[in-house]
Length: 136
View 1 (cartoon, rainbow, N blue to C red):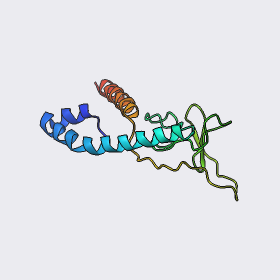
View 2 (tube, rainbow, N blue to C red):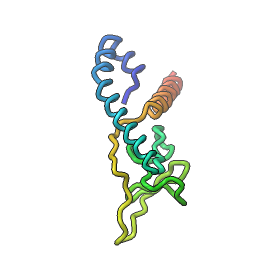
View 3 (cartoon, rainbow, N blue to C red):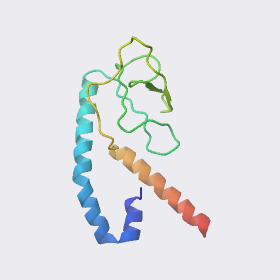
View 4 (tube, rainbow, N blue to C red):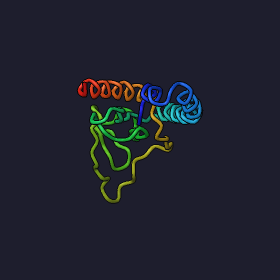
């Protein structure tokens, strides 16, 4: 996925602006719903930690994963069959047979938060600059 800077360099200002304006309402609507669910989860006493750092190779998981355990829990964070540590490194650890599944009542969309989006864009711009420099 190209960053807006790369899109502008490839297609020009006009096409990039049209594409940006076309995507933004959908993205902002999903982000607003995710923030609302995060607020509800915090008020309901959930831990709500997320493992996704938005930079490839650093951690794991998905943007919509949130810890489904109550705040102040012991051990690793867990939604369903996955766990992660404070560094965000995830692992599959199935819930033992017969125990109820662990999940929050609110499902988030896969839309990244603004912070995750900015982190990923900065990382991609650095990567592409390194790649251009190595070709020269």
